[in-house]
Image (cartoon, rainbow, N blue to C red; front, side):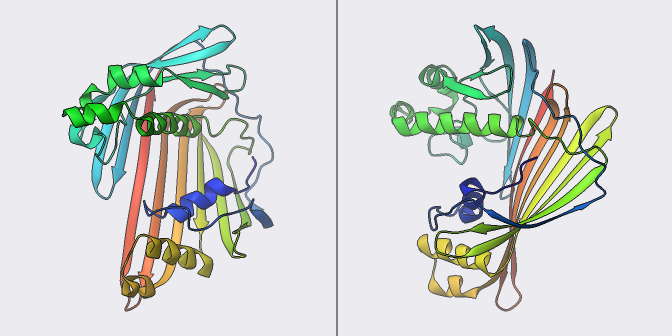
Length: 299
């Protein structure tokens, strides 16, 4: 499995729990060293074989103690040489509908346009029907005329498009994964920032088999003085008081990914991501911020 970190890795670090991004640019990460533990050799690569059919999908998002759970039914049909994945209107299973409004904490999260996929490799070819999806499935978000006008903006269309692509990326992230079963590896790398800073990154990957399914866990840990420096830069860019910025002494960022799936089809039963940032401030104060997303699939 390819374990390099590019601007996406930096973006997750710079974002640091919803703070404004763009404080630093980046180039591709440069691996510094790599070590393995309990490795039992290579495994036949995970392959994408979804095919026609249907699947019930439930997504649960937790951020700062707030939980929102949505549900869809996805239909998979052949579309020429492609596979089209269409979604029913998202329903709120748990949480406040207000969160889905254009100015809510999870704007239009219930809206899923069609995903057009290459059935051979799972590559996302296109996101289609965005405007129609917003019209058909965004009604839950529009409470006022101002909301209705907002739904017609390019910013909303871009947000729906990005969210759809991010979901698909997580659902099929392990295509081509080939680490042997019952093994664990640890890779060390340095994420080089454009201003010359180097951010140490340790990636631990484990693969186990449980009742015929593969369970893959990936943990990426960012640490070192450069993480605290980037955090302070971003914090300052949001207008935080200088005293708050100066109080930051140490920052540790961890990204967790776990998937339970059939490696011969990439049909998952559960996928979970979790991002945790621990901020150590002067005086011994520790601030913990976490966000997670969980998807369950019933085929």
